[in-house]
Every structure is written in C-alpha cells, then in structure tokens.
Amino acid sequence: MVRTKIWTLKKHFVGHPTNSDFELKTAELPPLKNGEVLLEALFLTVDPYMRFLAKTLKEDDTMMGQQVARVIL
Image 1 (tube, rainbow, N blue to C red):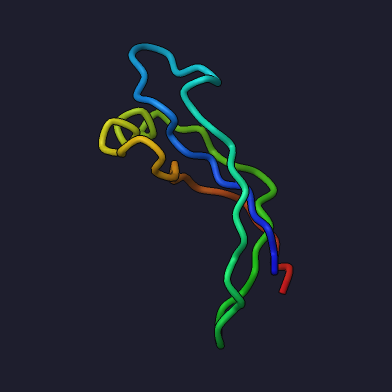
Image 2 (cartoon, helix red, strand yellow; image 1 turned 120 degrees about the vertical axis):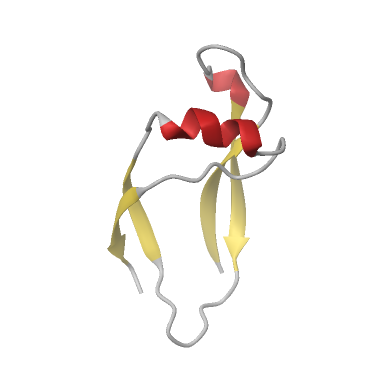
C-alpha cells in the first residue's frame, strides 16, 4: 500500500488562516485500478479562491487545489 499526506480543514477561520486551522494527516491509498496513475505532488497552489472554498467545507474535509505533479506509476 502507498501512504499519502492530506491537508484537512481543522476549523473554520476568520481573517487570515493560520497553521492551527489545518491538519496534515496520512492515509493509505487503495490499489490502482486499470487506467489509473499514481502522481506525486511537487508544488501545491495557494490561491485567493481557496478562502471562499474553505467556507463551504465541513471540518475535517480535504482542502482542494491545483498542483504540479509527476507520474510515479
């Protein structure tokens, strides 16, 4: 199994977000299915739209964003 890191929203923030508003978790990925690929994130974006997106998330939801990645498998 492959382990991954996931940034989740720990609590909703007011004003500027801080490190304590997010939590880095690890999880095991399921085996790849036919046609799927495994990617490694090299760079993650932090964009203004993410502030609005965070308001729509529930606590413990995964933050979404864009990335630059490379194919591992």
